[in-house]
Image 1 (cartoon, rainbow, N blue to C red):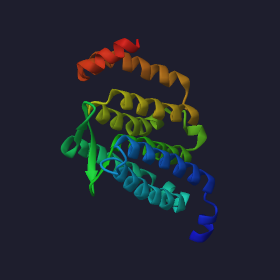
Image 2 (cartoon, rainbow, N blue to C red):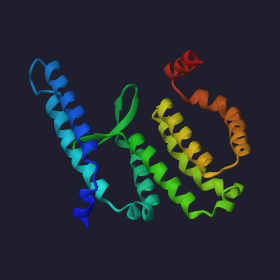
Image 3 (cartoon, rainbow, N blue to C red):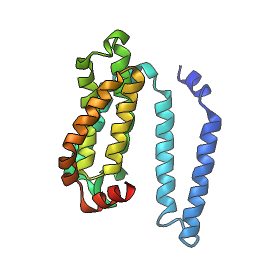
Length: 210
């Protein structure tokens, strides 16, 4: 069974990823004056680890991911909550945690697991029940809790991305448009609190964007 899955892998995609990565290695090698230290060696090691991980994930039965969609989401959400306890700073925010010496950014993982969790939820829900207001509670919990934790880091941009990602999935799944307008109204009411919860440099960034 595994052998059959290996044969179905997109080898052209893997080849393109490898070539792009090699170009990156060469750039880092050149930037350090013809030395693999300190950047190229670490990048090659990361590539090898995650390339193997990519293959392993590709071999996992999609039904397994579907069955354990909520568990996968909850695990990544726990990683996200540990950032406040054991996270390291970077770019003005506490975003990364180290596992076995490898820095991981849970806010990026949570984007993927939100897709998995919401996909499972709406797959299990009958289409005629999607419009019920009570059936928006669980999706909103799945979306809002991670976005709030990411905002606390503080990482305003990723928090907004998580919100837009989750709401887009809800809209595509068939949630009525008026519910989004209602949600937007709640967002406007909560704006003063959100504005005071972000850092001054983030406020300047928002003002410059507007």
